[in-house]
Length: 85
Image (tube, rainbow, N blue to C red; front, top):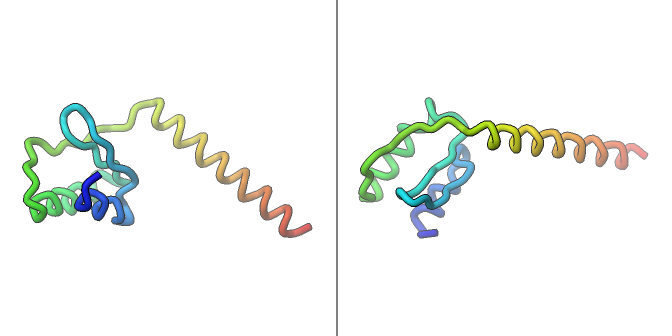
């Protein structure tokens, strides 16, 4: 990943960046809120942007996110139980 994309990945609302056949996908917390700052960043970085689209997550992606949150909550609860003991 380029240094510029690594910089973008450090933004608090940018969750992931990955290469696709068409270019890059930037995963953000809230596309409605975060699209404009990401667009401005690409503009300032002089990157050539052919399109900038909002894509909804797939059902698989949502399922994985739910499972990850559940596991994190279970782990936190287990650690809290150990700390209380």
